[in-house]
Length: 113
Length: 112
Image (cartoon, rainbow over all chains, first blue to last red; front, side, top):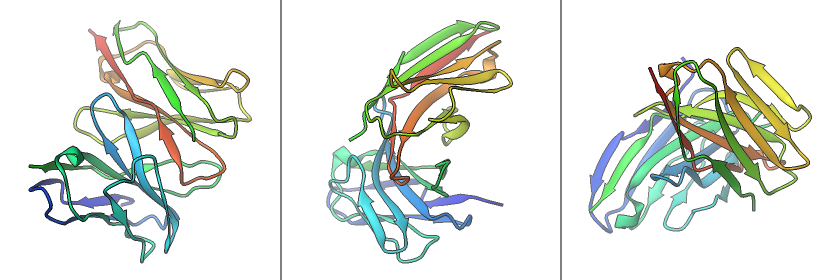
């Protein structure tokens, strides 16, 4: 089954404790992205990747890191989480090209205390 | 960079009525405009999309129109049903296929 898998689905942590949210896709998609969703603010792109070892900043990259060492995986790293990073996070993948349809993971709800 | 504005933020209609959600974009280089539906507690999923070389596209009860000159596009849902209740997002992307900008979302409520 074609899918984008995120883990964990729920995470409660404390300020400053490094964490990683994993994302994996089995569709051989070139493009992968991370978004955060906050009430009234829609989906804001954090980082995206066009291929292995190629990443770029989205609209809200501050406080986040990413890496793309393998085509299928695109982890999101928060090296020193702060309460303003409490949010719902979605990973997405797409083929790119003429129709950039995004396929989203189920989401990770993060609370930073 | 691209800026996408979406209106209204909330929309309530009676079952069977039509619903229209509008988006404007700022970057004339944008050429792909998808619409996503997000049901409560679920992930966003594509419901319809349009490319800049097309003015209108229909799929059963939903349609999207695009006015490139005015830089706006709209989602039309006819004969609304309670299961259409959800948050709808518009988005825009261009030559950089990795970069997508979403609107802030419209919460549609269809009252039976």
